[in-house]
Length: 298
View 1 (cartoon, rainbow, N blue to C red):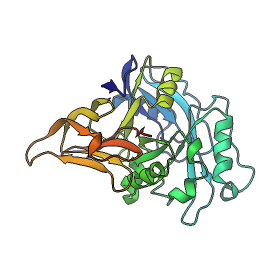
View 2: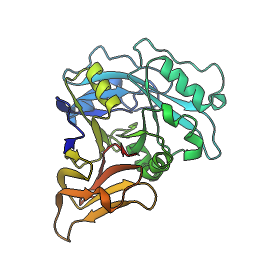
View 3: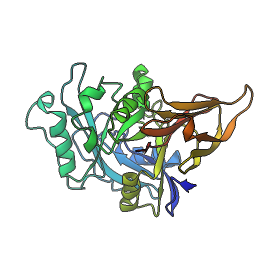
View 4: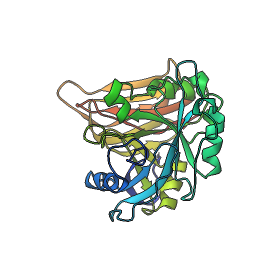
């Protein structure tokens, strides 16, 4: 069986969406980086609204700064779009030349791509973005936020499993990420992250691993490995109560640990029912989740 994380390297814990006092966050850029370092993070992408926040002069050692930005606009029937640009150019400058609501989602995406950003759809559950809304840009997105801590804390709409599967079921090959989108920090930070397997802790290596999907997303559980061949998929993880193989509508499989016990490994036979894609989701006894990226089948 082949590992989904077969590349050589080390695991690095990262934050891909968070805010500072340069927009509407409560902490300065320096304090944000220090806060995440103290929580065991290896890299942080600062994503203030319509502004690329530069690396602080007194940035702490031991945590990698990555420049990013969050743009909003593109009105939908229920809300609007927010797109996050990850690893944009340090010199990137974003200034709206018309009211935000007049920007289409495609225009926002192209602004971010013009500055070399990996573009992620932010908190689709929070602002009511549907599969139909996102269809025009979905194939050009790097990922979508399957978990957003801030949106969960604020109004209980941080989880976007349904929106992710709606896109995947329609053959949009999009990855998922878990993020904080922290603003207040005392309540909305350190609750969602990505674990990236990269050769080194550098912007180039982290970006390459993200683009290849050499990572998983989590709010707590650890995924040690995922093994796949033509007949089965096996996951090895920290102790969890439930493991789901999520696939196309009416397809997929699930296993639940007996009451009072946990699972640390499980194999799903693909012959038991699989659609055009499969992704794994695990849940521990505290209700915390972790997700792999999808694997696609002919």
